[in-house]
Length: 442
Ligand SMILES: *Cc1c(COP(=O)(O)O)cnc(C)c1O
Image (cartoon, rainbow, N blue to C red; front, side, top):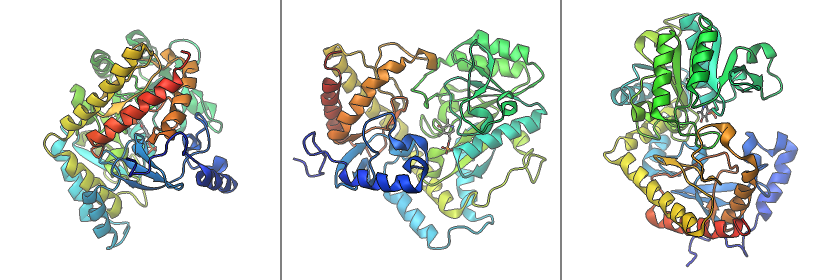
């Protein structure tokens, strides 16, 4: 019963992937174009995939995998959803980019404005990083202030001043986590822990008058899944308003994922600026930032905050985004996806409980995180890094059985609309087998 050619522990191979990776290392730093793809945190060379269909990925060695990475989040409809592929093919036949406005812009713009209560105007860019970078510039332009407060454990793309972590102490200036970032840039960023109202308040108080914005992932999902209490997010809204500081919800992951209105809609909290990426482009490189009309009219050419892009809102990307978002608006879409995910993680959780494994699967909507602890983790410093060895083992055991997770224990998994109950049952069975092997002796 292996019509799909899933690997098994005795047949699994990476021979062709391994060869391609050796070749790629000659051309590209580390053989990749984004660091985590190099599989440094897990075992073996990265798998080279050549085809995706529904919830499945097919690699260059001819093996099939149930995909829980989904290109890191964009593919909420799975691979090659027919409605999206068709729309993209029709559009691309008429040209890939004109560097002018096109009717596609209006279609997706209207769709989002009509269905997102907090978006009055939006500007499209080409990546999540670019969206965040532009949103920060906008916040600075609107307030005339320079400092940014961010939370430890939130990722906002590779924007210079946001590639920082906290130093020692509760509220600190950022220390850059990458070479090539001037100290003066990192100093513009103040880093505070998540889920810590006192630290937030003292940062706002100590730097009153200097802070342009607070940026947060309302569903922090780039350093494990650090689900916050709604009270903390509400406090963040109230305190920023009190201090005249803009609140940015970075919804590059959560936007259109935990609901059409993302985390803002899910929690019913209105930020001042929102950033989008991933799902908004339906698999094409798209990002966007959005806000009230009043704030967005600070953006050029209406206002003084400059921001531009040669390929911004190109018709192919807009068509992919429009076709994807249209499906998301079908009645029951998010309810079905969340219910499926819930059933899947409950299956895994029951198994771990029966076995007495210290493993949990926190989730929200269709995002879940396999984590090797029983603790409810809200802050990055609560993650026990040494347990990542267990993820590493599980990752390999899952690969050998035809289940693909993103190659790091700090990454979340995604369920797509293309994951059918039978696929999830198959995957759950294989994950349970993998956990049995992984947890032997723990
Ligand atoms: C993925 C992500 C980004 C960066 O988006 P890119 O398209 O990779 O540049 C920024 N913020 C959050 C919350 C993300 O998840």
